[in-house]
Length: 218
Length: 102
Image (cartoon, rainbow over all chains, first blue to last red; front, side):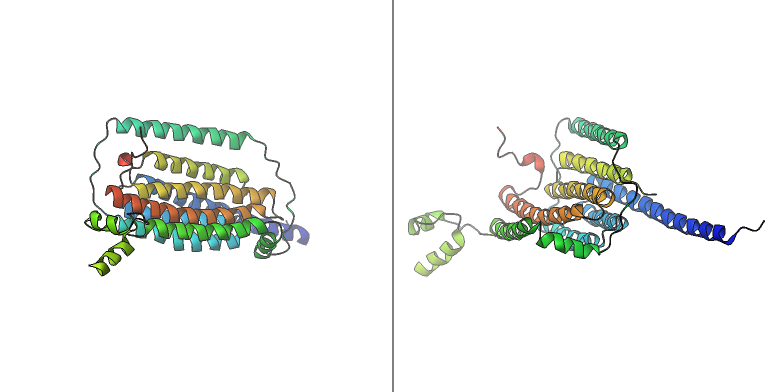
């Protein structure tokens, strides 16, 4: 009846590993269901404000999945950038274009939605079959990560991914300038005839400076 | 035990939901949200491969960080475009943005 001590120890160790794996699987399931339900809500709900808040739920669930994938830095960056920046930006956009409008009915719209749904289901079936059927060459023994992932990411960014890293900063600067130029509100003056006479060098839509210039002349 | 296939299937499901929203939604802001869903599905794939196939040199995480950067730039420019088109056409209905339609 009495087990040797070695055996008991190994049994306890197995139980501990099983418990950790069970926690992993359960949290994966919870996060996956949260993510799918929130994503369906983003797409299907009528009120777009609810969609924006559910989008934050999707992002946070994905961040939890990243934690399950041993990526702590990217999980934090996901929450900071997506929930903190992009989602707030989307909420601001909803506030800025907030007009209750009843969309004009389009003929055969349900047919289009049905076709899109069928195509998406087909794409999912294709991808799922591919994922299940492919023999992924996963190495049996996973080597232990010695340094932390933040250190590893920093090494990558400043050695072999240095050029894309710097290009990303240039791209962010370009996007910022482009967004400011696109979204700047420059209103047209009421009578364009006056400004057309005074300015032959500038475009008529750059009317902010032109209006003040015309006011000075008058 | 968690496996790579679970994450890939989840990414595929999120991608398909995003494509459905991208095609069928009429509000332009919702189209942008669907694009974010698509980018997140791709990120999930990259992170799964990075953890299961390349756990030492975590290059998938590097690519994910780049994709997050591009997504931030894309959201800013896309929302600016939506604002300016809203000022021009006074609507955000995707069915009425037919300037380039012949």
